[in-house]
Image (cartoon, rainbow, N blue to C red; front, side, top):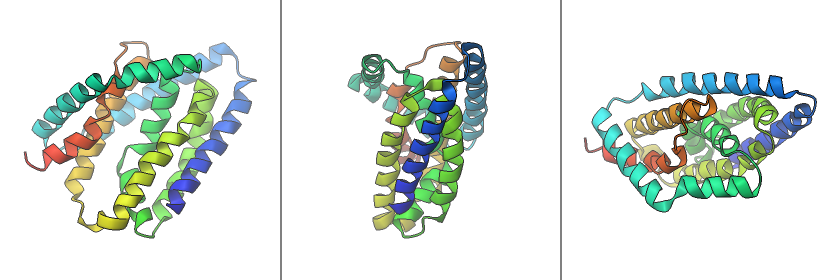
Length: 215
């Protein structure tokens, strides 16, 4: 858990610096920064999506997970929280998904739970610098993304402590692919192309790796 705690602190530190920088950035530059983040999110999503080797399990997992997320009204609840706090939902989702979905996060967190935080510590440096840019564009909501990061990576660390060596690599790859597709939907929102309810898709991150082991 040590690496995960340091990772969350790095995001808090970086986003705090970004908030200070945000005050000196005009609206025109903020819009350009958002466009760059949208394009980067699009690139990252495509790169991650192509890691899947079990497309049937991927689509079934996405459909099942999105149905569950819709029934749980995840996107609606996230929007409500964002509106109450007057913060953008994208400011929570973009950093969280960028920081937390990918082989480095999953494997690093599992290794952290097994007593080796080196991968997560390296990731913490990258996340700290990335959070500066995110906070400059999205504002205070990026600070809040440290909370789901701590919960998600902390859960993986605990999992790694008990069964880290027995998890199949293919399950991690399918989780990465699902994360990539969610990022693609998020990129469409950021770029103003289509408002997709990407939070409803989040349960797919858990369901797809399980389904893919049988297909």
